[in-house]
Image (cartoon, rainbow, N blue to C red):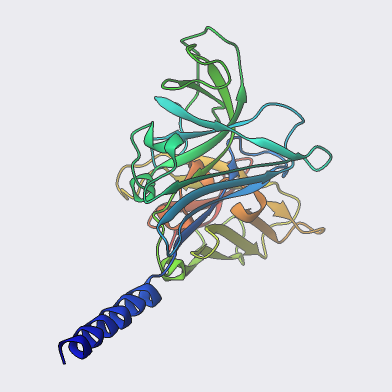
Amino acid sequence: MRIKQLWSCLAVAAVAFLALESQAQSLISRSQLRRTVDPSQRSATGKVVLEVDSKGVQSMEVDVTGLEPDSFAEFVAPFSSFGTDCCTYAVAPLGRVNSKKGTWSRRLTGSGAAPTELVNLGFNNLIDLDGLRTDIAKPGVNNEIIAFTNVINAVTNVIFGIPVPTPGVTNIVYTILWAPLYAPTVNPSARSYVRKGTMVRTIVPPSPHAKGTMTLRFKGTSGESVFDIKATRLEAGQAYHVWVANSTNQNSFLLIDAGTMTTSKFGSSARFLRDTRFGDPLPQQARDAGDLSGHVVEIRDEFDFVHLQGVLP
């Protein structure tokens, strides 16, 4: 009787264990690399994938195409967006996969914890990377400690930690791509959103019949951000620019030229599109399109006449 009870208990325990195993789900997040210089021609593209599988294996994978032939490495920075006000930390060199296509890749893994390369930098689990960023950089001049940099359109960073490719030497590296990092989750699509709004004409509009729309989009499954401004019935023949405020403070802000709009053949329609799927940086190197919600936006010509204005949705 006791043997039967023992086998019964073991059977119940086995079922419970299998049930827990079946409930184990992998966690994942994806983000897209974008250029550090804007405006710039579309060239390199890539993605960063953080994953924790059902067995607890944590991995970080970087894949890039369209890079130059030699010497690229991955770095991590303790900041949410791109800038050069401090430092980045070398993680590992990338491996070239295809020289003709400029394809580079690296996959790091750890069992029950973040990959060793990240643990050595103080990131014990992939969740510790949430809100930070990763950079793809090429080597600069060795044995230099100070570099003159510009927060807007900057391309250099002074690195500390474990320098690559020269251990024990503080190097300057040239960051050419970066991506925001998100904590892995069971349902990354829950982070998705689409926000739309319209623009209005000024009191004395230089384009009396102009109309404009604004779209901010984020796709959680891929990490794709889209910033899309469209305008129609503008005065033809002008070059139009999109200007975006640097803050959500409606009483005190600075408008920054985000770039030139692409006009139709006749010139009365114009569009300003930034899509991280193609490696495009967002205005002011924003982390996500939604980070610009609440910022004033204007469409101006090169004489600084304001044709349309609005607040990003």
